Amino acid sequence: MLREIGGLPLIGRVYQAVRSSPLLADVIIATDSTEILRVCEGAGWAACMTAEAHSSGTERVHEVAQAISADVYINVQGDEPMTRPEHIAALVELMKLPHVEVGTLKTPAAAAEIGNPNAVKVVTDRDGRALYFSRAAIPYNRDGADTRYYKHLGFYAYRKSALDRFVLLPGSTLDKSERLEQLRFLENGIPIYLAETLFDSIGVDTEEDVLRVQQVLNEQG
Image 1 (tube, rainbow, N blue to C red):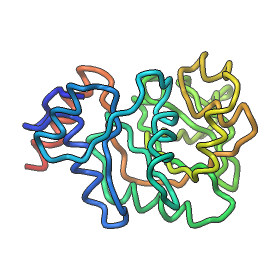
Image 2: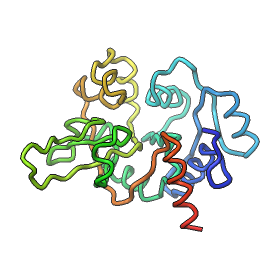
Image 3: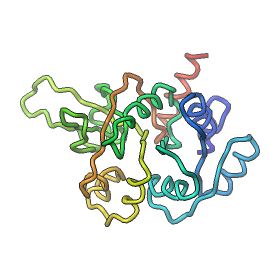
Image 4: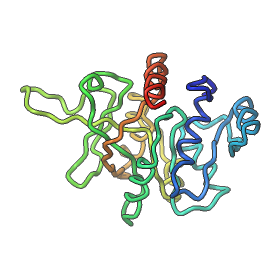
């Protein structure tokens, strides 16, 4: 989180990107690291300490939600430096639907990402409700038909009721297998709806991702 990209720590670049949206009442960095907290305080970025025991970002957001009241909580993972206001706007628009408790984003997957386990794929029904998320290439194109693949982006929106339910759910075998926390919702019958965006992002998981983000920033000046 403190790796510098384009002259800013990764977490600071994500924070500034999220703050660029005019739709949010507040933006807070939730961390369990005193080192990250000190960096945030020194830079003037709003941050709060949360428990070390959380096994997922959703649990961390739930802790914040106990102290801060909101209509909707949006979780942008700290490895998403290419966050755009359009990502936030798509989530906010999705959460205007009263039946949506959990929302997230998808974008058409590039050919190079279909077989990449660091790029999570998603399949939805006709109403945009997630059927499954996987690090594998889904759907499996058995007969070589013209198949569209969608990449899941690490942006989430929750109502507090969904967060309260999530932390009480039993462990998910799918979550443990794929290492994808959103599968705990699906395995326990809580639907996740997706909005589509044409704006891809680069989640920083590897050194190669750092170089890709740096290249994009250089191109943008």
